[in-house]
Length: 140
Image (cartoon, rainbow, N blue to C red; front, top):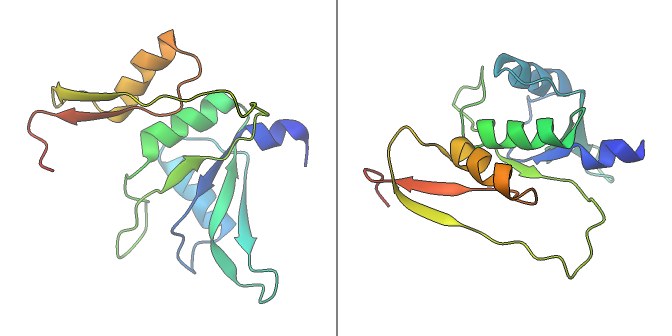
């Protein structure tokens, strides 16, 4: 695997047994994303799917944007419905002294979603990985 591929990937969990590489690739494409490839991980002893995969993109920005746009949204053609469960799988060689911070923002209008919040903060802070917000009408 090329080194650049390690940086441009997402982890996707909660896969059902019928979800093949092609199924997952098509689901991302139907949602407007363009991953380069999908690698479903398998149990090394049984060969059965382990319930997660890695989704490779052309750039870190594409991967992170896809994660923020799709996380928790329904996966097309799943019945019963299954939602995207995505996380950053990049291993960018950051040292253990690098710190990450979380920001919680409340009382947002209903037209502000997590992706919009991420875009605002990432334009100012280039190391942001995620952003979560809570609208005024959101129930806990």
